[in-house]
Length: 149
Image 1 (tube, rainbow, N blue to C red):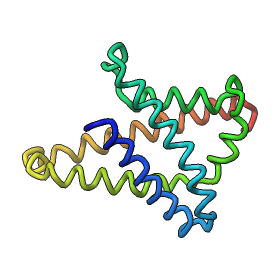
Image 2 (image 1 turned 90 degrees about the vertical axis):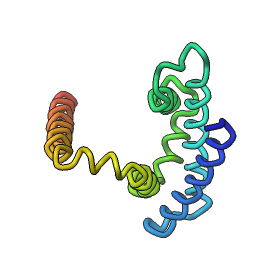
Image 3 (image 1 turned 60 degrees about the vertical axis):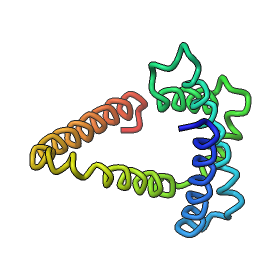
């Protein structure tokens, strides 16, 4: 996919997310767009970093996550503003278009799923269970270490 197409899609999805955030969580549309604009800029920076020849082997999500971690950490001068503005975006408003896209992407590979058949069920259950158990374990350790529990 070309760079300009990807940027266009990020902006389009941000508008859809802002509408979902406004309708579902009663956050002002302009405020939602402001917050999602920051998230789009972070995504574009991570995407562009992933296109550099020395970083091509690593996935885009890694670079987007690194950029997001840096701009929201105390070492970044505007971290308080960024966190305050982006805090107005609901996670579910972000997840809805992403999951819709994932559903459409899976739908085009229906023949592949037919070949996998029932074997995908135990694999999925193992992945979901492992993810949940280890996320809960990490949360338990972190919250205990922080003194919250």
